[in-house]
Length: 110
Image 1 (cartoon, rainbow, N blue to C red):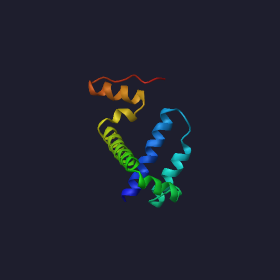
Image 2 (spheres, rainbow, N blue to C red):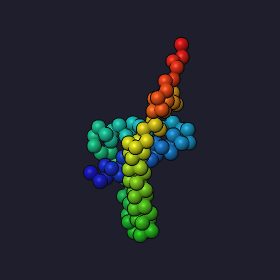
Image 3 (cartoon, rainbow, N blue to C red):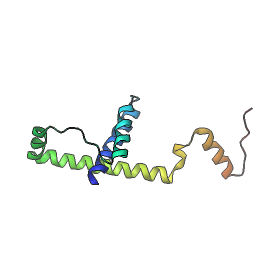
Image 4 (tube, rainbow, N blue to C red):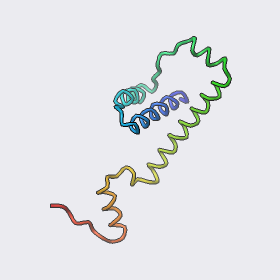
């Protein structure tokens, strides 16, 4: 289960990075969909590269930092969406909601 969360966090991070750079992110969406459907997804791992990573404690520490960062980023995004729903609204919806909070109504465009 922890591996699943790590993969999901990594893919979500990659997606956010691609969105920020205004690059296509359909491939990451496909991987996320596969991960959600199957419950797991793994890229093929080169055994020699894995052994090399295990030998170097600095790399292990860096990987641990990346995992912690991605987990924290996922939690941050969940909390941001939960407690600040205005971020996911369009500007029109946000204006209408704000106007309703102070007792005003936004005129409809015809």
